[in-house]
Length: 460
Length: 49
Image 1 (cartoon, one colour):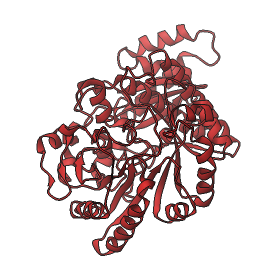
Image 2 (spheres, each protein chain N blue to C red):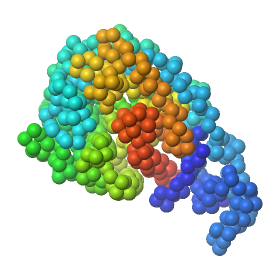
Image 3 (cartoon, rainbow over the protein chains, first blue to last red):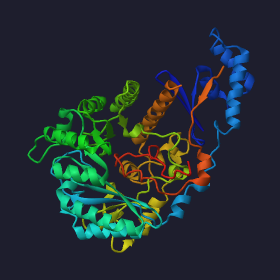
Image 4 (cartoon, rainbow over the protein chains, first blue to last red):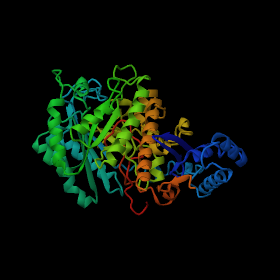
């Protein structure tokens, strides 16, 4: 399978099953489009007609181009067949019952009252609550006990607002550090915060212990304060931005993400990215809102063309900044063509419900943070482990080949089947298709690869 | 005339033979939490690349 597209002044051809990326001229772009369905003489005649009068387009030249395509096909870099289906469940089978990542819901409560919050203001449609040290400690032990030979263990302190239970966060990190060496493990912690409670103590701790810090900021003040308000209705932008700036300044190059959400109120989210840059932030992420389609903040069909255009403009801005020596990163455009994931990772799905689980403040296990609060998805608990095998098996069987709609999708080895929660919320099935999300994902991948191609060509 | 420039990319077929260690980051354990793919995850296995 191939995917051809044009962006900026580039023609790009992706060969899906080999992972190859080709930058091609107009002639090759057209020829590749016909290569598998037409005879050589038909293609060359068609090209002579289409490009008649174009400089350098001769029968000899077109024959040479045709041969270049044939050479790439013979080398397995164009029109490669899909030979991976037998591998689809291999990694999960090999690592059955291995858990390597937990989302610790350290606080099911929040000091902000954002109406668009997928976690219903941190409560996940349930009671407010804070995780005790005892529950958190048992969750970390559960992770170590179930991680088999995995060395890198990931723990995200999540909420609600995790800093509302900061003492327990600190105690749990200290506990993990005390056991990791003897257990042969390496804990990687992440903290996701709205920033309200950041102070010097939090900054010192986060920069010492957190591999990554995810900071929630929606960009422009008026956009951010539209949703991200406290219980008195006051916007939080003025309070949190200086704190984020101080934290990032002190972070000394360690990973962080300034993470925003865009909604129906700001499909023109590039302005929010620009605001983040203006504030001095360089590692950015903007995510489409996750909410029911009838929610006023949901992206509409009319928003989609705007969002698509914003993604392209964002890529152009990133390229411009890269060339000016002032680069910034956008989470969804990070793609390492030479060092990215192996085919097993690309086939295996996101790992929710298998290698990745969420833990509630009371120790219940769910397939991921987005299923917390929906009792039918409760997998078990951290004391007895997974008892709801039926649900776990449903998640374990999610992979690139689990959805027939993905069969012809060129982006499947970049997305690995997508987000089970998005699928469930859009269709009622974890193996459904969240088509709006797919459209946005494909656009982001086109932009991500475009950036890599443009950079590579620019460096030649 | 060269009509096609092929970028250096990881050979996915080859990775079927030497990949699958499972040490890489879980895709949602990142900035995103709502709409992840796997394309932006880094491989942790230096020997397999």
